[in-house]
Image (cartoon, rainbow, N blue to C red; front, side, top):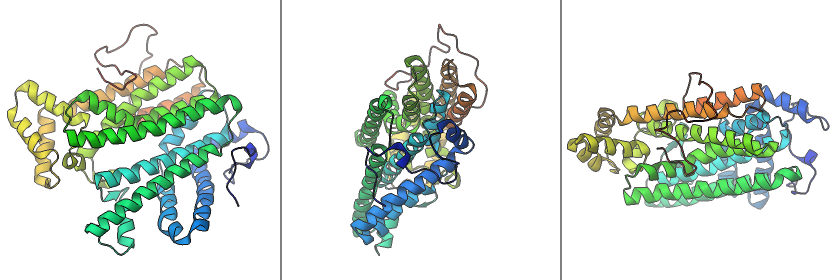
Length: 412
């Protein structure tokens, strides 16, 4: 079957086969998806990616076998579907039921994630992802090359960049070929364009920060927001609100809540990059240290050590951070310093506080559907690592004025 054209009618869109979809009954369809959003996204992804792989096979069978199937498999293996679920429950919280468009946009978000992870692993020279070989490693080895040889590194990295590009192409095609109500088309596509540019800008700032040796906390937060927090949390929620045609007040409340949760998500991800269990994260622990990534955690460690006059801690950080050959004993020393100077506790506390502020901001969206809002709140709490129930935020004044998050992603 050929690929769909953007002008095709909505009912030509791929639909999960067993969600009880028949005819224009969007609310019933949405209620069916409500019971298992992950399964609905998975079925839609299988349909969309099946068409993508078939088209790649028509281009060239070897390319399809080596690259297209790998991109599809990488995308379909993910089980959490965080971004599509955020989009879905934001849309549902706003009282809308654009089921087919939401599911297809969700698949687009998953493909954007595939692009980001594949190319991030190339840039970071990571060997594993989700407990398996990173794509550039697998491509090199399955081409008969040693992944750590000069030829293997060159081929694997180049082929993986193309795989990431293919995922991005598929993501854009999926969005372009999704029927959107006329009033929703422009805001949804504007958000999509912004999200792609933000992700690339953030990745570049991450790379540049490793070269510059930046220790600025403000720059670390801006990089984190652009590289991950926006496309992982804030933009999916904004897409759901735009798809629903939410009013300005509701959209502002949802985006503000997701902005705080997204930054909490990234702060916790920084912590996992140093202290996480590889069996749980699917990634080696300590790579951020070896690569000299300019994270907020490291910026705070230097700030705390400097304030305490701890020259030994500063010297160790200067020596160890960015050392690609740092062994496990060296990593253990860095972890000990991060805890001793109070940086780990400080970042954990700030992530928790950002999560609470996310809950309070979501509570301001008073016109949202309460059940769907609760599901969205649960997701925001999960990504920010927050558990306790947050009190309602007053309409005037700001709790905890010493820690706020601006549009630019700066924590003060």
